Image (cartoon, rainbow over all chains, first blue to last red; front, side, top):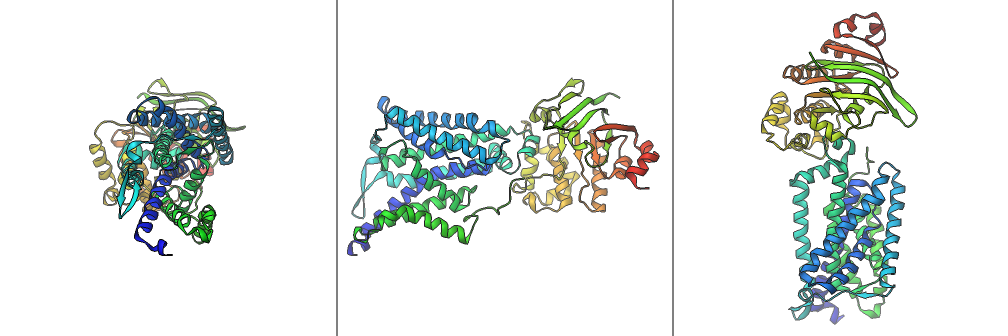
Length: 301
Length: 235
C-alpha cells in the first residue's frame, strides 16, 4: 500500500498509461476514419501495424534510423493503399458483410506472410537511441518514448484535424463520408478520397508501431492482434467514426489498463487487465450505445 | 439555335430492369427543357445517365457535339453539365459556405465572383453561411442545392424534382429562380411531377411514359394538349 501511494509510482504509472493510450490512439484513428468513410471495420489494420513493426526491424538493419523511419512509413502506406485497392475496392457495391470478410482474409494473409518471412520466431524491435534514453522524473527513471509519445500524438492529431477541417481533400473526405453519390456529382473522385484515408491511417499506424514496439519490443506474427483489438475498442468506445472519440477512448483504455497492471501482485488482478478493458466497453455501450461521441445510429443513405 | 445536349436511343438498365427504353430528345442551348411523366417513367434514370452516375446500356449522349456517353461523373461536371439531385442531397454536416465551395470542387480559378452571384440569387444563404447545411429548412436546402450546382459554373443545369416536398409558395420561388438562372445564360433540363409548373416555365417539353418519349412540343402546346391535361394536369 505504501508503495502504491508513493508519488514516484503514481507518476510512472500515469505516464506509461498515457503513452500506451497515445500509441493505441494512433492505431484507433485508422479504424475510425475508415469506418467513417466506408462503414467498414478494417480488421486488417492491426496486422498492418504489426507489418510496420517487422518492416521496421528489417529496414533499420540496413540503413540508419533517421533514413529508415521515412522508408518504413512509405512501405506501410503503400501496403495500406494496395490492400484497399485489391481487397476492398472491387467489393464497393457488395454487402458490408462481404467486405468485412475480405478484411478478415487480409488480416490472416498478413499474419501468415509474417510467419513465413520470420519463420514464426519472435523478432526483437531495434533500440532507437533517442526513444530509449531515460530521464529522471520525480526520482523515477522514465524512458523518453513515454514522454515523446503523448506530445507527438497531440501534434499529429492537430495536423490531422487541420487537414480534415481546412483543406480541400479534408472537405472531400467529410462529404464522401456522408454521401458517395452526391460527392461524385460534385466531381470528387471517391476512390481517391478513400485511398487517402487508408494512406493516412497506415501512416499513423506506422508511427504508432515505432512508439509501441520501442516500448514492447517483441514482435510475433500476431503482435498486431491485441493492440489492434484494443484500438478498435477505443474507436467504438469513443463513437466509431469520430476522431476525437477514438483518441479519448484510446487514452482511457491505455491509462485504465496500466493502472490495473500496476496494482500489487498480491491482489492477483493484473492478469485480468484485458478482460477489464472489454468489461469497460460493455458498461459504456450499455449506457451509451453509440459511444462517447457517436453519431445517432442512422444508416447511411 | 444549336442543341447543347443530344440524347439518342438512350437505354438504362438496373440489373434486369429496363428503366429507360431507348429515348431520344434534344436540349437547345439557352432554353429550359422539361421531361414530364409519372413515377417510374424513367425521368430520373435519364438524368443519372447524363450526369455519369450510371452507365447507359446503349445509346448516345452528346454535349456540344462531343460524345460523353459513359464518361465518369467528374469528367461530365468539369465539362459543365451538373445535376441537382432529387431530395436536394446537401451535405448536412458541412456549413452552407462549405457546401457551396464543394460545388466548385473541380475549379482551380477564383470562386469569389460565383459565390457573390449565388449569394445575390439567394440572400438567405449568405445570412446562414456559417450554419450547418442540415439545419436549413427544406426550401433553403433546395436553394443551397441549386447554389452548390451553380458554383461549378455549369453550361447545363439538370434538376430532378426541385419542387418535391416544398410548400407552394416556396415552389413558386424556386421556379422564379430557375427562370432567372436561365436568363443569365444557363441551359436548364428540368424533370418534374408538377407538370403544370414545369410546362409553364419550360420552352420545350417531352412527355415520358414507361421509358419512352410519347409526346413532344413547346410548353404551351403540351399545356393545352388534351392527353397531357387528362394524364398530368388533372383538368
